[in-house]
Image 1 (cartoon, helix red, strand yellow):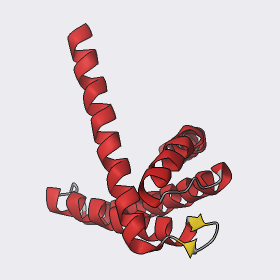
Image 2 (cartoon, one colour):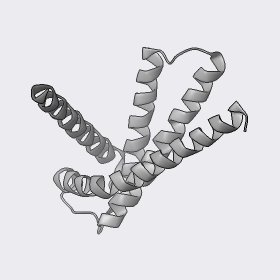
Image 3 (cartoon, helix red, strand yellow):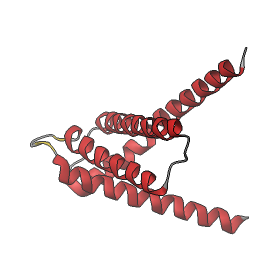
Image 4 (tube, one colour):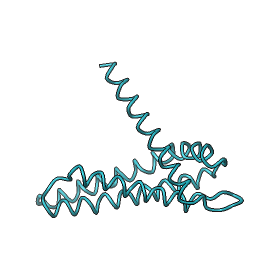
Length: 142
C-alpha cells in the first residue's frame, strides 16, 4: 500500500472517530441543552429533539470546518487568526439558526433565531467555563 492509501485510511479512521465522539458527546450535551432551553425559553424540550438538534448542528459546523480546511489546504497556508474567528462566527450563526428552527415549543412552535442565539451564547459560556475550570484543576494537580 502506498503512502496515499495509508493517508486515506488514517483520515477515514479520524473521521469515524470524530463521528463516534460526536454521537456519544451529544448524548450528554442533550441534557445540557435541555437545561439551557428550560432556562432561556421556559420549557423543557424532549431529549431526542435536543439530541437531534445537537447532531445536526455539529455536523453543519464540521462541514463548514472541512470546507475552510480545504480552502486553506489548497492555498498551502495555515489558517490565520482572522479566518479562525470568521469560522467561529459562521459556526455560531449557523448553530443559533438551527436551534431557532429545530427547537420547538409544544404550544407556539419554533423558538426563533433570537432565542436560538441566546441558547448558543449560554452553551458557549458554559463550555468556556467548564474547560477553563478543568484546565485550572489539572494545572493545580500537576
